[in-house]
Image (cartoon, rainbow, N blue to C red; front, side, top):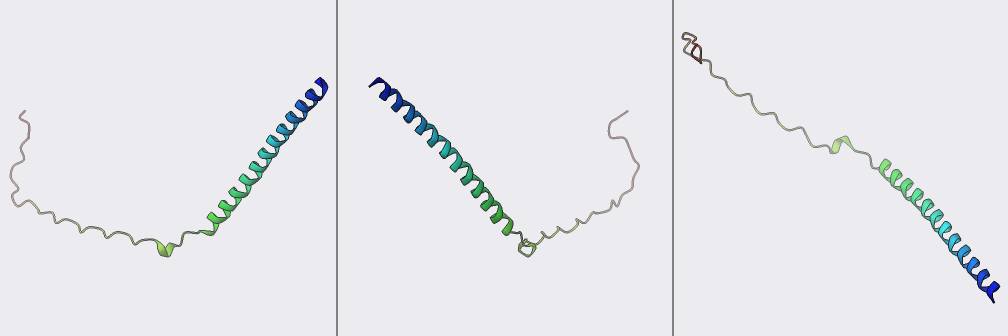
Length: 79
């Protein structure tokens, strides 16, 4: 009876370990496949330069008025 219980515990432990190993392997393979599918999909979606929006229009240059009075130049701060 004691030997049978110990044997069953070992079998259960071995089965649980094998299931864990199998799940890790399946998860790794699935991750690799999904990654490669996403990479291939991204490669197929190229950016078409025709779809780019046009450049914005530059604003007109402002008109700068020239000074009409050319008087004596004085310092702003008194010295």
